[in-house]
Length: 292
Image 1 (cartoon, rainbow, N blue to C red):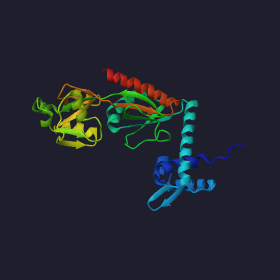
Image 2: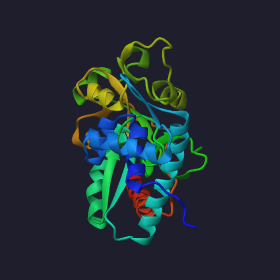
Image 3: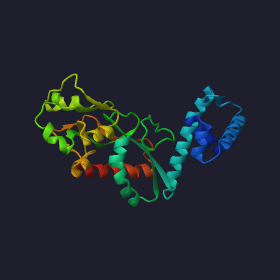
Image 4: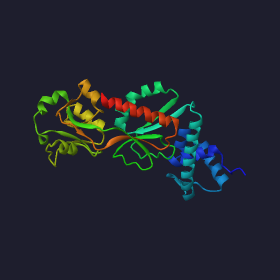
């Protein structure tokens, strides 16, 4: 006997609505009207004879049954997408990549034209949010994240380890050169684990425990602040090599510290042809960049 399955379109509507917890946002993602999504979910609930969502003035929440079903539907759609890609390699594929904003802007974006020229059949979508992305479901195919290599259940390819070096604006180099760290206006990034303290410990420099200076939550703002002459930031090579070559930033000290953590390329559905292609290309591209 053939299995009793709900309409596939209803499952697509449910997966998007459950992930976004919004009929409106699901409609925007699927290029439908909110009314069409809402009616589609109602039809699915009637077919199942189960309430999947609790509708409140503040928005949607999943019922216990809906939360359980969401995990199953998300995994099933991901498996279906993977199987489709395997038997139809010429299908116009959208490869969904998630990466931190600074890495995406400074490393990935300049290289994407090469990838698209080499693989015009693979469309690319890049997400730079800091939210945790679920590689089990439909949110992303590959993720580029910083860590120590411990990624249980995922295929993990080490891409590169950053080299830390203090940098400042060229017009302030003469003023800052030869001064102790405690005398310099240091720029800190509060969202990274390896910053001034790590560089000082690795290179044998002394750092004041109450170092006064600017603090930012993004690397980009720290680099921009240093380029504008507001102080000295920890540059991260090769992310800032373009600024150094252009003369926008210049190293203040010669000593570099290699980070203990690295940028890793993570994926789960490694049999997917597009994922395999991107993994191979990205490893080759970063190796080439690090050797230059």
